[in-house]
Amino acid sequence: MSILQFFRIRLIRLHPLVLIGATLGLIGYLFDPFSKAINHTDVAMLVMAYVASLLLLPSPPVGGRHNESQALNGPAWSLMQEYLGNIAYALILRRLRALTLAIIFGLSGLLLIWTANAKGSLDGGWDYPNIWMAPLRLMVSFVMGLWLYRVHDRIRVPKIGLLLLSIVLVVCFQMPVFSKIGEYSLNGLYDAACVLCLFPLIILCGAHSDAGTGMIMLCKFSGHLSYPLYITHIPFVYVLAGYSWTRRPSLNVKLTLISLLIPFVVFVAWLVLKYYDEPVRTWLGRLYGIRRATVKVPGQAGEAQ
Image (tube, rainbow, N blue to C red; front, top):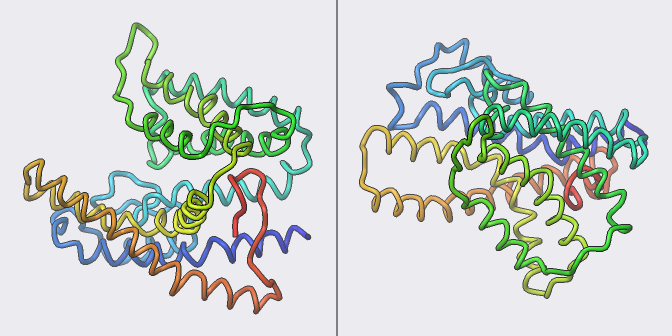
């Protein structure tokens, strides 16, 4: 396909949910009942932030959003990086050999290790003070994904199974914050080790593993729901955070609210997927003569539909 066709397919796949995510973010900002004291922004600035969110551009800061580069829909900062990754893939990365990609991955990985140790974690890139971390995190992960796609058939790894790999991820995400020993941040080095070693190994093992019918169905459902959930959940999280800041509820109340919020945001994501995203993508695909707005991007995990 041509570069223009590639960009068109990627926009059809990604941007309808960008629009709904920005709109939900604006509605949540305006009508959050618990954060009115900090959600103060003049109309012109708020309109500029909304337009920037619709275009997936860095937005002007708004009250109550802690220097987030995507003020109305915070997680969209990484989607903006994904757009940049797709542009780099179409123009440059797809033409590079596996060895060249490995060298880029290695050099950027060394810089990532230094950054993680200096900052004490890899939690950065979403905010303006640390926005320089965003392209670094993009480069390491995207190039690593593309390199793994090129070489995964040549690497022998054990067939561990998707369920066990999922358990490994859960354990990995639940690790505590580690201390600092001298000039070395164990927490930052742990983050870097996960990104550079553990996650690639899990991807490779998963690519070579089999799964039963039930696990495949769960994976498909989760895969279809992951992007809508990612782009729509944060306004509801802000409401819960505002409630916690203003009302100071007990731990039991917080846990109860979180246990209710999780299925709620999953249900909202499912509604958005079935009654907005899929119909809009189908219509746009027909409009531009694309049967399914589908393209396999090697830098990403799996098929982006």
